[in-house]
Image (cartoon, rainbow, N blue to C red):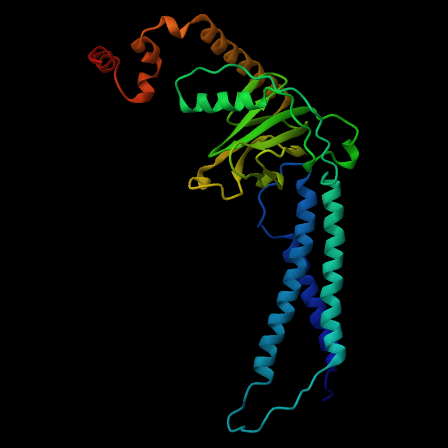
Length: 329
């Protein structure tokens, strides 16, 4: 019986490993649903890396298992193994192949980064118009501080993911100022004066986020968009993207920022254009009503109990108890 050449076995093994690697690399379920124009670019790069990793795993682990079986110590065999001093062609091969892979992935990643706008954070300056907020809560105080910090014209970000090569000379359809604080995200819309704890955007719009941090480094990450950008104290950064699918997607802080880092979460809600216009109109009306209430009432003319009355429910006390405490003092 004629023995099958090693080269033929190697060819067959290579074909099998390649087929398995490509199938697994493009049919895995490791990534969440794509929801941005940038997501397919990242997923394409990830699939290539994952395919190569699967192939290397099968080759290395398969060789180990094969050698464990083929060259295992037989019962009664006390002889020494063959003296192997080295194999120059093999060493050149396993050095050259990883080198080519790393260089190829490096060039590919630079191209993906460029297509996403990583080399062009345009960052057009603008004024951030804010509205007044009702006093009496910690959130209102935080929003007030945030408002004071952003009433001046915003410095154009020079770091981050900016305009893609296709939108390099175009202004973004929607600009949102995003401030990270321990432990929340505050979203301000300069064009409408809306401030929100959630990010609301229309599907298909070219959105520019101007990121900043009030205290420590935070990282704005939307897994479904395949986008992540640090928010740095004193250094403005930018994140520009286009959402492609309506829905609600999580926003996570991906930088350890303190004891409650794990709870620093919110969501981005991608609306249809009609739903977004409705949301913006409703919030403009609501915030204008709040502003009118603040202007109409002079806190100096109110007694302590009257001033605190709207907040008794949040404080967990009854109005009668509040009155008795105020009178007692």
